[in-house]
Length: 360
Ligand SMILES: Nc1ncnc2c1ncn2[C@@H]1O[C@H](COP(=O)(O)OP(=O)(O)OP(=O)(O)O)[C@@H](O)[C@H]1O
Ligand SMILES: [Mg+2]
Image 1: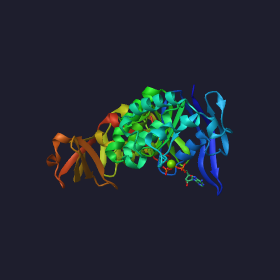
Image 2: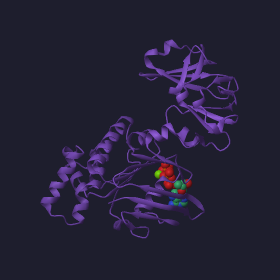
Image 3: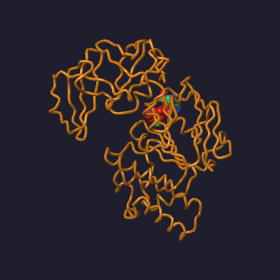
Image 4: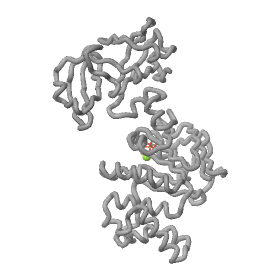
C-alpha cells in the first residue's frame, strides 16, 4: 500500500524564504497526482520532502502506514526521476537500467530478464548496447524511466521529467506515462508547470501558488469549477477572458461593465453575487460571436487549423478572445470588422471582485 499523506508540511529555508507554507494532501494508493503551479511556488520542495531530500521545518510525511518524516531517502522505497536525468555516461543503456539491481545483487539470469522486460515496455530494446550520449532526448528519457521503474517502486516521484524534450515528443511521452501508470498501478506524484500536461495525465491535480495549495481536484473539476481567479487563469489556452463589472439586482439579471450590458439567465448568476461588483470569467469557447450582444471590433485572427481564435476590442481595458470552429476560417472575420458578442450562460463564472473566490 502506498497511500501518501502530507500533514501541514512547511519548509522555511535559511534566509527566511518560505518555500512551502502548510501543504496538506491525501494521495490515494495508485493515484496519478500532479502538482502544478508557476515557477517558485514550492513544487520541487514539496516533492523533495516526500522523498527525503529535504527535511520539513514542520509537518509530517506518511507513506503507507509509516511516518517517514525522519527516514533517509533510501529507507522510503521510492523511485525518483529528475528533470536532469543523471544517467551514467560511461555505462551502456543496459548497465544504466541494471544498475539498481546489481547494487542489490540480483542474480544475472533474473537481472537480464528484468532489463529486457522493462526495455520492451519502453520500446528501447534496440538501444541496450548504446551509451546515453548516443540516444535522442526522448530515448534517454525512456531509459531514465526504465531505470527507475525496474525495481517496482510503490511510489514514483517525477519532477518535470519531460521539460527537456521538444513539443511533439512531450505530447507523445504524456501518453506513454499514462499507459505506464495504468500498467504499474503504483502511486505517481508528478511535478510540472505545464497546465496542459497536468490536464491530460492526472487523476487529480493539486494547484500550487506561493507555497500553498489553491485547489485539489480532477482536471475537469479544476477547469470547469476553478476555486478562484488564480486557478481560473492558470488553466486553459488561451487564458480565460475576465471582465470586471456588476451584476444587477433585476429579473432577469444583467451583467454591466464598461461598454457591456448583457442579460444573463437567472441560473447563471449565483445568489451571493446579485447586486454586487464581480469579476466575470468566460473561456474563449463560451464567447458567442453573432448578431446580438455587446459591440466589438476584430483586432487579430489566429487560425490554429481546427479552430480559430478571434481577438477583439470592446472598449474595455483588455482584449477578449473567442474561439470559433476552424471551418469558419479567418476569412469569415476580417481584422477591423465590427462584431457582436454574447456569453454562453453555461460558461459564465462569477468571482468575488475583492478576493477572487469563485462564487457559486
Ligand atoms: N535550497 C534553497 N535555499 C533557499 N531557497 C530555496 C532553496 N530551494 C528552493 N528555494 C526557494 O523556495 C521557493 C520554492 O522553490 P521550488 O524549487 O520548490 O519551486 P518550484 O515550484 O519547483 O519551481 P520551478 O517550477 O521553477 O522548478 C523558491 O522561491 C526558491 O527560490
Ligand atoms: Mg521545480
